[in-house]
Structure formats: C-alpha cells, structure tokens
Amino acid sequence: KTRLNPKRIELARPPEPGNGLEEYFGCPVKYRATRNALILRVADLERPFATHNDELLQMLAPQFENQLKAGRTKQTILEQVKWVLKRLLSGSRPDLVMVAKELGMGERTLQRRITDEGTTFRQLLNETRHELVRQYLGDSSVEITEAAFLVGYQDPNSFYRAFRSWEGKTPAEWRAANQLRKPKKANAPAHSSPRA
Image (cartoon, rainbow, N blue to C red; front, side, top):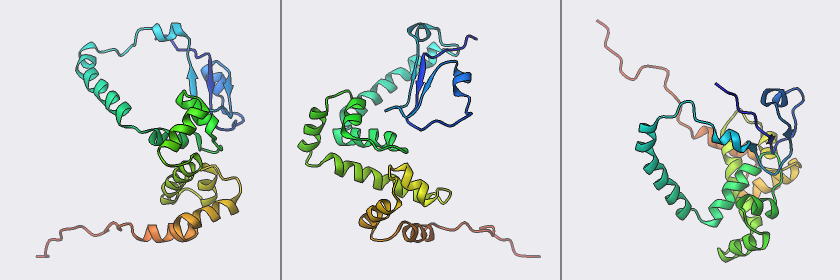
C-alpha cells in the first residue's frame, strides 16, 4: 500500500493544540477556513484504487448516476443554501459571500435567486439555525450553550431571544417538554409466562 500525501487540509473549526493532524497527514492544516477540504495532488488521484471491484462498480454505477441526477434536479437553491449553511454553521458565522463561494456563484446571483424564491438570506440562516438547534437540543448530551455555539451564536442572550421567538419558550423548557414526549423503554419483558 502507498500512502496518500495531501497538499493541505482546510478545516472550518478553530485549532486544537496537540491534535497531531499535521504530523499524521504530513501536510499543513489551515484552521478557521471557509470550508472543510482535503486538497490532494493530481498524481494521487490517478493512483489505482486498492479495493477496486469492476463487477460491483458496473452494478452500482448506474444507480449512483441516477441518484446524482435526481438530486441535482430536485434540490432547489433554498435547499442548497440550507445544506451549505448547516456545514458552515458549526462554530462560525457564515455570510452570503461564504455561501455563494461554496455554491460556485457570485454573491449577487445568489442574492437574486434567493429573492426570486420569495425569501432572504437572513430568513434562511434563521430557519437553518432553528432546525439545527432543535436537533442538538434533542440530544441530552449536548449542553445548551454548546448548541448555541454550534449554530453560530457567541452571545447566549442573543441565542435565548432567538430561541424564544422560534419556540415561545426557553431552550431548557423546550428540551424538558420534548424529552417527556419520547416513549420510555419498558424494563419488563413484553410476554410473561404464567408460573407453574
């Protein structure tokens, strides 16, 4: 086996001292980038795939192509923007310029396409934050302050105001109400046999 040596790695998150990524990958790692990316050399992309299976590829390739085509035609610009926002929101504050760059279009073009759909970038950002924070708060292992940070809020007060406007209650109240609705697992077996 020959090891791939990337040219560089770009990560949207802040650096973590001592994580050893530079040593492991043998290349520079850029933190707080606008995207997460692994940049490879062309020569590495030309290498044969060690686990290549022609028969399986011929069987699955048409299905993958159809799924890709269906995904490209079905996904609206609003869905594309939300998808990019979900990726970029983790601890950062994405703006229209960042999203346009990720989608490979100009800022004005993206703004026009969003406006043509009857919404604004700010509304999409708020909707995406709302969807994500509901996911995070549904997981009891995620602290409320961590959920706020993960959707781009550095100020807890701003997050609490936004959440109250979305849900009409505080994040803690929402979490408590939604955890009560989850069905509880029964400890006793479903079928019990009568004693002899």
